[in-house]
Length: 193
View 1: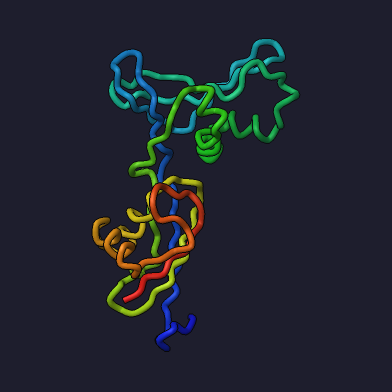
View 2: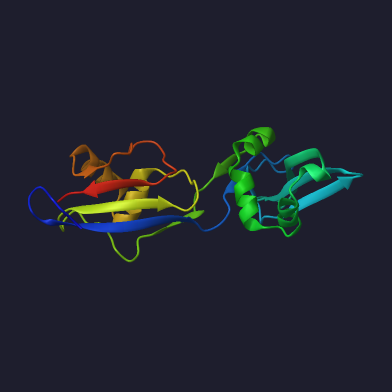
């Protein structure tokens, strides 16, 4: 805890943003024209002699049509780390999350990610409150999930985004990080009464 300029003690809280499921894959289905696919983390590894093609499988949210997201093409089996290949054979969901976050894979497959409902905020039971003095909050991300800081802070405080925007404009909610747009890395903020 630290002393505030007015002599009151600032409360320190730690919040954690965690993924609760894999994000939806934004890509148009060629069967039903829905633009969302969900993946359970299953990989398909296809061997052609000593060359491997590896895909991450995803199902359309509208018609359950399967699409393959290219992870690797025509790679020699010896050029792939054995532990990585084992994780693909075991359909490791953590590896699927890493693959989806990889910008090269997203560009190659012309996809975007929709993190709506795919993350949760753990405030440790505390809730920052502008009415109880000064509160310093450290927000840590377990994965690089792009979130609007005002939405995250609103959820953690149990307030509306409009209330949080008013606190920012009034200078009662400040942060060294930019609070507009999206953020996907750790940051801190201070809420003053």
